[in-house]
Image 1 (tube, one colour):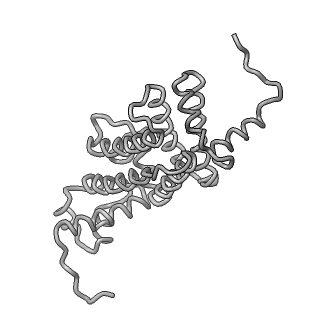
Image 2 (tube, one colour; image 1 turned 45 degrees about the vertical axis):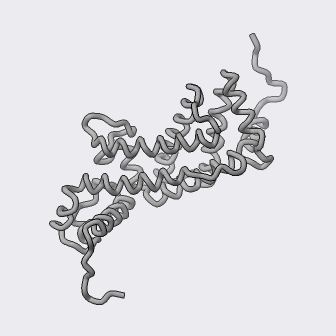
Image 3 (tube, rainbow, N blue to C red; image 1 turned 30 degrees about the vertical axis):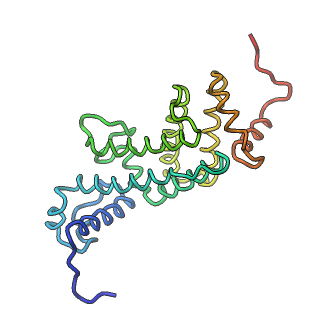
Length: 246
């Protein structure tokens, strides 16, 4: 209910309001398509007042991105209880919740919005603060996965597996947003199984990774995503098939 009189906001309260309004608009459309006038109108203030709190749209975009990055990073946090497959499924559920909620903004950011170049790679022409935020989300995801695996000092092959999987999750989400042609629940399960597949391929070349894989699968239930993948793959291998041995 309104009283007909606007409540005067403090400086930080107004800044947080503008960040929230901008994030909502950037979530629905590419940041390039959102104007300062729209942000001001949605916040119920004048255009000059927006500039009083933020020097321009890019600085407001970066502030909104910081809030979104903190939100996204937090979605990778998961209690270390139960089998790894189930934990990763919950993480992927929250990750795709974010993608659903911030589709256009997520897409613009990862594909090359006003602050990040195509492919998500930082360069001299890009706002370094924005690149740092994106990298912080990736690092938070990386650290969380390592903590679930119980490997604080990962070997090179494991680092490659985890960072490759994080990049795969980003790319998969972008492709999914363009038409959503694969059911979301199936895609979430597929990404969890992709992690197991990457781990298995690496384990085939390295005994240390093999030990990690066996330990990871030891507490996987019969209906878990990792065992489901193994069962599906078994049906695809011709009977009697054997890899040639030297």
